[in-house]
Amino acid sequence: MSNPSGDVARLAGRAWLFGADISTDMLSPGQYVHDPPEVRLRHVLESARPEFAGQVRAGDIVVAGPNFGCGSSRESAPQHLKDLGVAAVVADSLARIFARNAIAIGLPALSCPGVSAAVADGDVVDVYIVAGVVTVEQQGSEGSVRRELEADRIPEPMLDVLRHGGIEPLLAALAEAEGNPAQDLD
Amino acid sequence: MGGPIADAPMTAAESVLARAAGVPRVVPGEYVVAEVDAMMMHDIFAADVLGMLQRVGVRRLHDPSRASVVFDHMVPAPSVAAAEHQAAARRLVKRYGIEAFFEVGRGICHQVMVEEGRFRPGDLVVGTDSHSTTYGALGAAGCGIGSSEMAYALATGRLWFKVPETVLVVLEGRLQPMVTAKDLVLYLMREVGSAEAQYRSVEHGGPGVATLGLPERMTVANMGVEMGAKFSLFPAGDVDTMRPGASYAATHTVDLGSLAPQVAVPHHVENVVGVDEVAGVRLDQVFLGSCTNGRLEDLRQAARIMRGRRIASGVRMVVTPASSEVYRQALAEGILSDLVEAGAIVEGPGCGPCFGGHMGLLAPGERCLGTHNRNFRGRMGSPEAEIYLGSPATAAASALAGEITDPRSFAAADEEEAGKEEDVR
Ligand code: SF4
Image (cartoon, rainbow over all chains, first blue to last red):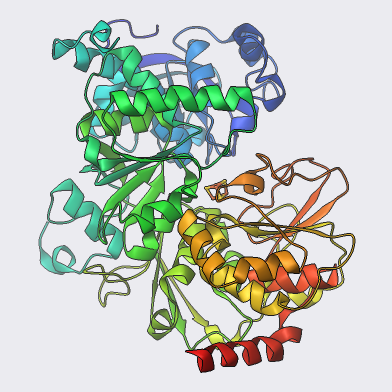
C-alpha cells in the first residue's frame, strides 16, 4: 500500500507521463481478462509504454493528458494501477466512469487541467489530494522553480472512501463501528 | 455567492440534484452528496452487490424499500451457471428484505420500474445498468453506476454526483406517419451525439414534447446514454425542462415533421443514415424488442404493418415483449397472433438477444436489423456479424421484404388499419 497510514492528504511520487485518451482497453487489455492476476498486471498500459508494468514502483504517480480512462466501465482498469503500486492518477481530465471507479476501489484520481504539459516524465510531483493542488519542481534558466497547478477537488465523502482504501473496506469499517459482525448474517 | 447568477433558474438536472443534496442550488462541475430515491439492480449484478455487503458485514440496507431487483438479462436461465447465480441472488434479496423483487418473466428492468411505479418525477435514481437514463421519460434523473457504488448507496442511502452541464433539445412540430421516436433519437445521435452530450444532461422541451407519449419518451431517454449523456430528461410533475434563464451549454432545435426513418449502421450507434441510404441491404434476422422498443405501441405498430402478410423466406424474426404486462395486452389485442401468423418467433419478456445473451444470436457474416440500442461489434453474438438499428416500423417492413426497407412504403396500409381500429372503438 502506498499510503498505509490512510493519510491521503499529500502524496509525493515519480511521474510516469502518458498522452491523451488512455483507454480502459490499454489499462486492462481485454484479451487477458481470463488470465491470472499476475499475468494481467504484466500487460497494463503496454500498448502505450511497454516498460511501464515492469518498471513502475510503489508510490509512483501516473500523469496523463485529457480523457484518461475512457472506454468501458470495467473496475479492473483502476484496480490494476493500484495493484501495481501506483499512488495516484493526475490527468488533464478523467473519463467520468474511470474517475468514479478509481475512487470506488481506493485509487486517488484527480483531474488537473494542464498537468501533462507542466510535468516531464520522471519528475517528482506532489499531489495534495484534499486541497486539490499538484506541484512540480521545474528546471528553468533561473534554476529550479516550483510550479503549482490547481486540480478539481474531491468532495469529502469521496475522500472518506479514499482514506479507507475503497468502498469495500469503508463499508467493512462502518459495519464494524455499528457492532455489526459479518457472522450475524450467516 | 449573490447577484443575478445565484438567483438564475436551474436546469432540471440541477434542480433534482440540489433537492436530493439538500442545498439551495448547485452549479455544473461541482460534486454533491445526494440522497438516492430509488436503486435498481438486475440479475447480472445483484448477487455481486449484495454479496459484497454480506462479505463486509453490512447487515441492513439503509432503506430496503428504495431498492428494486429485476431478473431480466439471463431469463429464463440458459445455463446452470446463470441459474446458480440467480439462486444466490434470490437468497440475498430475501436476507436483505428487498420486497420489490421481480422474478424471471416479469420483464425488462427499466420497463418494470416504470410499470411498477418504483420512482416518481423529480427523483434521483441509480441502477446497475447504463440504460437507467430511461427514467428521465418521467422526469427522474436516472443514471447507471458501478457495483461498488451500488453497495455504498444501498448501505448509506447516499451517493456522490458531479453536477453535469445541460444540453437543451427543443422539439417542434410532430412526427410524420411511420416516423417514430426511435428515428428522432437516432437523428439526435447523429446531430448532437457524444461530441456535445458526453457527461451532460440532455433535456427535452418545446411544443413537440406534448406530441410524444410516455412510451416514446422512454425510447428517447433510453438511448440518451448512447450519446454519453448522464441524464436524459423530459418534463413531468414538477420537473420542468427548458427553463427561461437557466444556463444551457448548447441548444438544438429539431422539427419533428421534417424527420425521416433513420438507421444506425455497423458498428457504432452514432453511424446514423437515412433509411434510403441502406435500403436493399439483405437481412438474416430482425429483432423487435428491448427496453428501447419492446412496448405495446411498438408491437402494435409492427403488427399493423405485418397483419395478413408473411415475412420473407430466409429471414427469422424474433420478438421479445418488454414485460409480462406488454405481453398480456399484446395477446389480448391479437397483436401476438398477427406477428406469429406472419412468421415471427415470440419469446418471453426479457433482454435475450439485445445484449447477445441468448435466444437469437448471430453467426459470423450474418446481418440483423434490431429495434434495440447498441450495434457494437459482437453485441449479438459473433463479432463477424453486422447489426443495424431502426424503429419497429422499419423492422416490420424489413422483415416482410427480407432487406432494409423504408416503412413509409407501408404508410397507406398502416393508416387504413389505424382507421379501422378507430371505427371499432
Ligand atoms: S433490453 Fe438490452 S439494453 Fe435494455 S436492459 Fe436489457 S440488455 Fe440492457
